[in-house]
Image 1 (cartoon, rainbow, N blue to C red):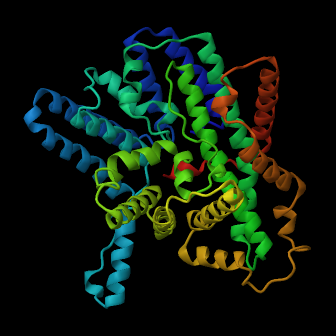
Image 2: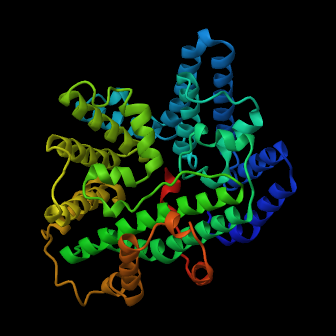
Length: 467
């Protein structure tokens, strides 16, 4: 079930909010947990057992750390091994077998080939809720958050449907006090509705048409240099507004339920360095990797060489977190090399005169990396880069059949509108701080347009659901 669907908007959400608001106190947490499990298990009910298993184990590990301090380290190991084990089996099992077989084939040792026992289906959002649940046990171990006493609170925290399958990754210490007591005010609800409308419009009005351009560009055989750049810019807009839109909808739904979730995006394409980009893009993941991986590895406290190694390790694992593919590893490698290079060059600082050049170079690096993120295979990615470099022998970019899709006025206009919104529009957080009649009129128009497009469009993927 996705937010941008009639099923969610007109059936699930009204029912969930009604059941939630007629409840009182702890009953609301139970209701929210149950409707969240319905939301998560709508397409694949069996996945609910994985979610419940992770929740039970991490709740128990947190209790053991509090009641038996001498077993804290043992309980932490159980939590980490369980969550990483789930990821290893369901997300990386098939990938590991395929790469082992490829290596064995190269060595000529066919007798030791591994055969996949089962066809493993990737559970929705497993990367998000395992990281979120695991962050709780790590924080309890460190003494940075208190142990949850009620299982209903912890189950609600892990499974809460607004951010269950695609984030943001919310740490328990961020919402701990909100489980004890939170307010439900008209002002908070209004802001939540505004957040949700903005996110829905970002997804339906901007991300979807940009995605159609990107799909056509990547499918096209013998694309021109212009086609390739047009397509990857479109993809950069699609993935931004797809994920930022989902995050804004999640924040809005959280506000309707009385919760305040952290902002997950802050104009990432304004960045003038890759370091700055990661302060603005998928903030909940970048801070998770910093606090639970980069700093424990030593951060920048053990000399320059170790710092560069730590940056590379973190970004390689960050790439692999997104998917079991060498494409994602290379995506992480590009960002890791850029981060290390910027640190080696002194942080990428410079005067105002160099600001445009630093912005352009940053955006180009991001675009090149997005090629590996979007392409289905390494061969496809390198072939696309070849097109971007103008090394494909093709006809002039105009007059071909694919131009009817790539450059049709509606899609081209949507891409230009998306680019304008990415660089010129205020963030949803800033826009919703003070709502007035003019803003509500704009939001009403965006809502009507989004609902109309939902009815008219058949193309409505959510990119981050596959992670």
